[in-house]
Length: 93
Image (cartoon, rainbow, N blue to C red; front, top):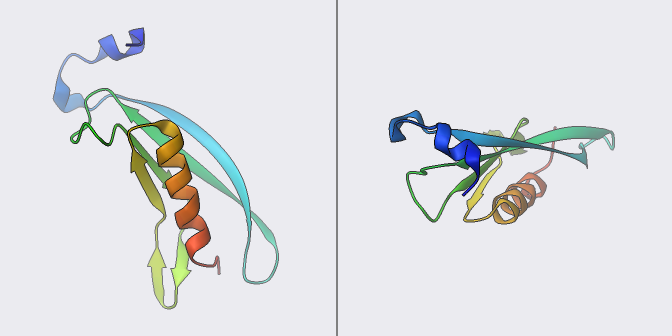
């Protein structure tokens, strides 16, 4: 256990270490767009199997419906990979 995790005094605080990643994706017009993925590493997650939660800073589009890519998992790699797969699932408009 890392020392930063001892800073949480109460489980309801939901303390998390934040990891920031960047990737490029082409939009429907062929322009490259930078997407930031934030992964939160929780000390005491609501579900112990999902200690890491990743979200993208941009929505993709599933027709008329906006879709917000996210991923979760027991490891940082698992959550980040799932979020990146979800980013590629629908086009950027």
